Length: 431
Image 1 (cartoon, rainbow, N blue to C red):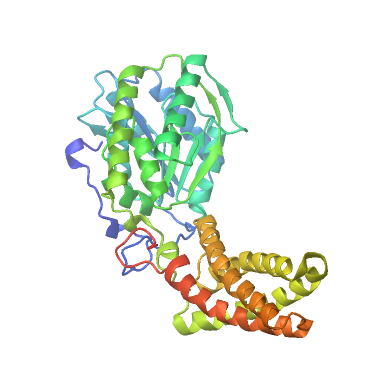
Image 2: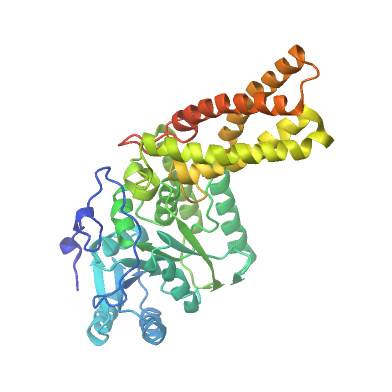
């Protein structure tokens, strides 16, 4: 047994499988968990309060399921937060009988407090939790943790609101759940679908950075953790689950709802004021672009992308000119090449990958396109004013020259405004 007073919270630097320290203080690149690890790869925490009726049956069922289906070493931690019935004795007996089980005893109530203590004390690279009633079908457990073990994602959550989920519960609980998640989307603009399904997992390196930022010790713990993680740009994987409501649930809906509203207000205020240190939660690949070249390399790559874009532009202009006329062909060719150019420079010149911020970058890129359109269209209009019967090769020559000038300006705007480098110690891209 681990008494509350002896629970130790490890500092993030104590992680055994972390990559070398990053000077920006951000999280290292995700790496797969070793398949040959002898210590537990997964620690499943079961938070309990006065669960003498369900505890033994549920833990033995979970233990049997993991032994049969989970291909790595695992551990089950019963986190007892101040039970007053026979729960502590049952948990102690299970820990003595099952080699993969242990228990932790806290002096105060609170699901969030129990998870914080258990996850902080665990050496396993992947940490999970599930409700003791096992409302969620355990067959979803391996799909839940697999993206974390492989290094694909940072956090994984079970969702009862996805199209592939199968949920059995009364209309009251269904309505409350959907209203709560709709409230989160409308107030905090979250992207995840189900904040409070008791079926979640997190990589330990992420938990070590997240837990000190999560203030709630009760039911809002899950929501607060997910909101902070999403705002920091961490990858959250959702798994549709089969879920059957526990009719004996003792959650006080009114007090929980009021606590959730206070939590939403608090976290919303912190996000609005910028008081959450999100920079330390960003992955090194997202924040520092280790593969992004310096100025000389950026110029070379930008020039290569620009050369291909110019060739593509000329071909498109020549193709569209008979049907669209000179101005229409110029605008269409430039628009198509601008979208392709922005996408290529985003990845190749400035080292950005993934979909995060892609739409914002394209929107800014289109504004740069408008500037280029003004330069090239103005050049074309000036040519036709000076030489109304200018030959087609002359038109193309003027447009190529104008495009070269627009390209130089585009590079400067891309580097300073569309894809600015993050400043050390900041959590957002300067815009």
